Image 1 (cartoon, one colour):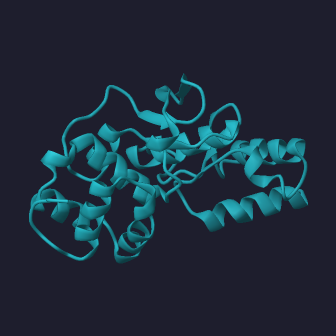
Image 2 (cartoon, rainbow, N blue to C red; image 1 turned 90 degrees about the vertical axis):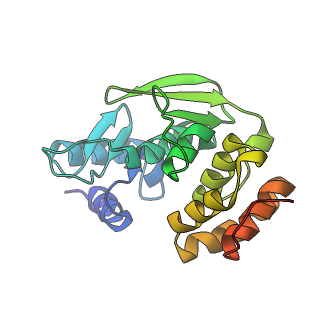
Length: 207
């Protein structure tokens, strides 16, 4: 292996399984060509899987298992965003489904982006990236963006104690701390819901 390839593999392993990578993620280790070659060789060796042009995954499953699980879709969408320098977050329907708030599922994975609207086929799955206004794409952490989008999708009148309890149960203590730090990036009523989630309060939202 080349020095760049060794470093690329070490970083991939450090980040853990299920993460998706593009050559841009390794430009601090070498040139674009060196990063491309390293990822291509690692895919041929079976260390990672190629999902599409310039898109690779360190799969969660063995070689015989599924390459793209629902949990991996957010990773792929974010990598597609990094390719074009765009922010990408799950649509409200996906976010609500991830948090167990609805059984509604889209025909395919739908994401909001500050980039252009486009569809990208990755390993047979079509990602629908839809342009959205900046106000719908707050500069928050991944988990905060997920919660904000889910709450916006449900609507203020539908958020009650059961929804709050469900979201709280879905989040770790650290994620709830992140959520509280990001309340300034969303609307007042969602901020009020977030505080109820973090403070372990129950009941309907009256903010």
